[in-house]
Image (cartoon, rainbow, N blue to C red; front, side):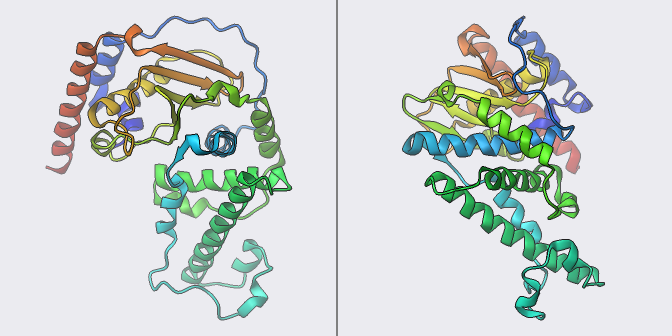
Length: 315
């Protein structure tokens, strides 16, 4: 069970909760007039969205330095799925294998277990490379911007292993990245003026919400800037949809349950959606959505519903 699955319209168990969200918190009727600045260059929409999240995170870390609080990457948690059962890596062929591509290497191994070991080794090596590239970027020592974008794409794929399940590790490959994906992310990054995220005091990247996150099996938002919770959208349509509104409402309800991990003094007074392809940050104050009593009523309903559904599933 996850916040995403709870909010999914395919989940019949939580239909009543979604109806309560709609009834309690009507979505504002907003008409945007901004033209799209970066049209999609590929159809890899979900991959581009996750990769842009990483790139934006990297640029905020570099721009705002000590004002940025960042926990470990979600992608790092995926590494546990790439451990060998006997913890052995392939070294029997020596350094002669080190310069070969993954696809060239895998042809040398007919046994699936050996191929899995090889993939696991390559994933870990690539992750370490991503860490080095990230550090070079933060220190303004990175010479090739494409290296950072390719790292973000790889980390985005690792994210899928965590968010969609370990079966996704079978789709990890080491082929050259699609140049259209790279160009798309380059344009998105260049279009984003970081001034819209400029903090007075702090930015919390990928915040989690203690008991609230644990309640739904783990959940992290994109960022909190001072007292504003922001979700990033890389959609080609500039409009406030009910699912978009439910997403930020869901994070706020988890915040009401558990606060912000490692930032207990943080308050959330505003919700925001950043539409990256249009460079538009839409915001709304919590007080303009509903009063505290209404939020607490929905929060308590969510807690009871999740616990009841969990009991039924394990019965």
